[in-house]
Image 1 (cartoon, rainbow, N blue to C red):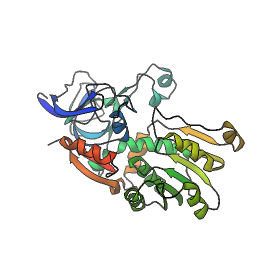
Image 2 (image 1 turned 60 degrees about the vertical axis):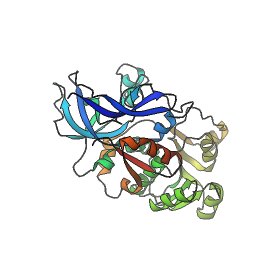
Image 3 (image 1 turned 180 degrees about the vertical axis):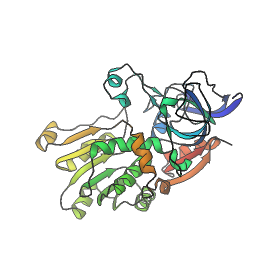
Image 4 (image 1 turned 60 degrees about the horizontal axis):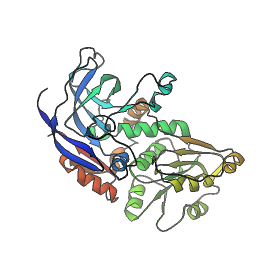
Length: 342
């Protein structure tokens, strides 16, 4: 396919520009060109635009790593997919030779090529990806939901570590898009006792609308007081969907003996202070979660009880990406879906 397309290009130092660029060409046997049907703005996209950036992105690449689309062209060796297939994309491309890749830990590849971060991503009308990075979207899953497969895959990987049960008491930090995704997944897992943190009346209302049992407005009350008022003991599982340094410091103190804590939120500048004796004395388990479970995510997307559509607050054309970013920064939006195509 020849011609130009609209794309949101990261130009460095917090600058993201929507402009015309050349449509990428299928050159390798395993290349696939997809028309991007929908894309989602991730919290890490916002972090990458801060100065200094909380997540490092390579200048002059097309931004965006949460996207889905329809195959329009493919390389000669691509047999598992056909023109017209609706697919979602795992943006983390494994190098194949580092320690992680050669020890079945490819999601943690130390030399990864990442669509939307170190290479061209999905905030564009078309995206070029390797066939090995694609998953066919099940029938009946709309683009709005398919665009959320990547963050859901990350959440599912964390859930696989945490192993929540219906009788667990769960403390969930953060009511942004990832926090609400965790909330919906935990609900499908049958979790009945859940306390969620949020800041401000709007976020509290969103969390309750998404099914949170108890929401702590951290601008007005403390997690500790709310736990004492509502639970007989403390938490069996704490999930950090925020990434601030103080969440680890505080949250780990609220665990019952042999409790588990999952660190999901990512900020390369955050530094926490945690006494090792607390972990040893209560035999606590601490997990860092960075992997992706795409098969699990695609399976769960077909469950109507998951209902990730309930916290999509804005749907915008690609040209209005800065509006979406501003709304997210100001906590006036939750999940923003972009439509790059005409």
